[in-house]
Structures are given as structure tokens and as C-alpha cells.
Length: 176
Ligand code: 5GP
Image 1 (cartoon, rainbow, N blue to C red):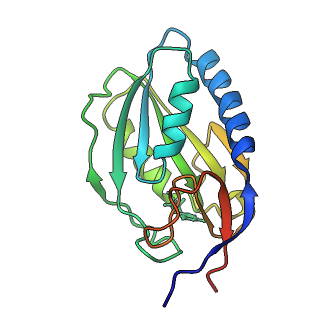
Image 2 (image 1 turned 45 degrees about the vertical axis):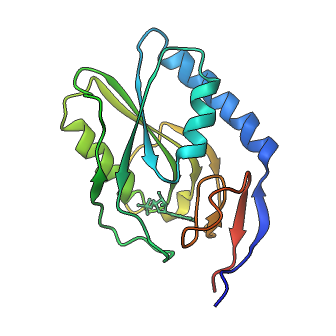
């Protein structure tokens, strides 16, 4: 069966670029002189991290972590498994987890707990997209790009069965 086609553009390329610049200004102000570790969550956060890091006028260290994902499905299992760890030590560092989207919040909450156990100076979170109405845990999101409704989205790193990560915009996908 062919994969469903992305339909409605939800966040256009120019809107993403403008918001990334604003987030970078806020992050640069908050972390001035701190050399934080940006922890990108593979694979979905790759375009976001790439754009965000280049918009940051401060020293940062960039690394990636990989948690188990949805696979080809569209709903959270609620379980998180680390399948690739950081190369850098985060003890005594400021950590900013950068992810593509927060839905139930279970993934970010688990990643945050995992990194907090390594005795960093702080752990904050930054996501491009927030499905705020879907939260099942009270994890704090410190920097949010866009709050979106409960629709399944693809593009700008987000996939459906491995497809559409390369789209430069975020689109809603009808998967019914
Ligand atoms: P959570 O643990 O917050 O429920 O889920 C977070 C993860 O679920 C995201 O990192 C992403 O991999 C996946 N996810 C949640 N909503 C969507 C969506 O609308 N589209 C895609 N492609 N992935 C999603």
C-alpha cells in the first residue's frame, strides 16, 4: 500500500526559520557564557538542531542521543529505550535537550531523568512542536517553537514510516 501523502502545511518553512531565530535569541541570552551541551534527539531533531545551533551566537557543545521511537506507527508506546548514548560527559555541564515534538511527554520526561542522573548543572528542554493537549506527564518544556493541535505531523525531521523527514516544512498527514 502506498504511504499517505502529506496534505496540509501546518508550519511553513519561513515561519520555522523565524521562530528558530527567536528561540536562539532566548537561549543565547539564558546561557550566555555557559557553554551548554545541546543534546539532539535522533533522528527527528536533526534539522531543528542544525538550524538552531547555527543561529546561536554563543559557545555550545553539540551531541546526540537516540531513544526508541514509534516505528511506522503513530501513537506512543510510553516506553523509552536508549539505543545510542552521548559521547560527551554532561556532569557539571548545563544540558539543553532539543527534540522535534512533544506529545504525551513520556519520551522527554524519561530522557530528562536519564540525563539528570549524570549530575549535570541543569537540564532544560527545547522542542519545535508541542501537542500541549496530549500531555500525560508534567515535564516542563522550557523553549517551545509552536503549539499545535492533536494531528499527526511529518516533515522537518518528523517521519511516517521513515518517509518525509526531508520536507522543509511541517505538514499534517491523514493516517486514518
Ligand atoms: P511522546 O513521548 O511525547 O508521546 O512522543 C514523542 C515522540 O513521538 C516524538 O519524539 C516523535 O518521535 C513521536 N511523535 C509524536 N507525535 C508525532 C507526530 O505527530 N508525528 C511524528 N512523525 N512523530 C510524532
